[in-house]
Amino acid sequence: MSKARRLRWLMNWWPPFLFSGIRVEALAEDFSYARVALHMRWYNRNYVGTHFGGSLFAMTDPFWMLLAINALGRDHVVWDAAGEITFVKPGRDTVRAEFRLPPATLDELRAAAADGGKVLRWFETEVTDSAGEIVARVRKQLYVRRKRRRPGTD
Image 1 (tube, helix red, strand yellow):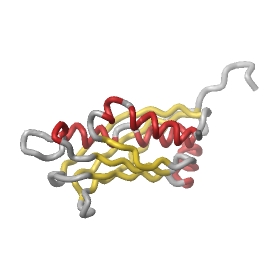
Image 2 (cartoon, rainbow, N blue to C red):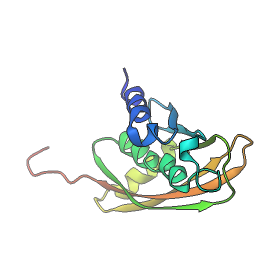
Image 3 (cartoon, rainbow, N blue to C red):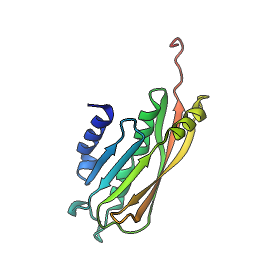
Image 4 (spheres, one colour):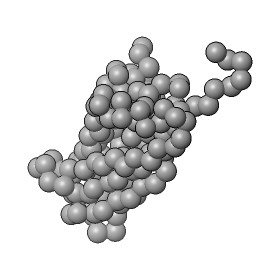
């Protein structure tokens, strides 16, 4: 089983996703793409019968970091630095979010971090309903840095 396939399987059985109705539907072998769905269930509705905002954020929370850390490789440190969500309209059915990390963005991150300094970069994701309408906009800021070499490890 490939690393991406194993990670997708593990995430779908990870209790915070499993018990929130969150499913990782797709994860590219090269970690350049992911698609996640949040299914409406009786146990993940809020007081007014729409998607709980925490679940909307949770469905998007780890993916920019997971894509970047796996695509950049072991030479880089990647952390979530900040996150924010803007609720646009109530979500009443299955919602989805897609993440695309193109090679050009990876090249930019590698170049910016080449001197060993930290790089802070914002990534945006739209959460859409089954009609394609935007339910929420999520922004995540990643911290990226090239790992420091240890003396004598050439």
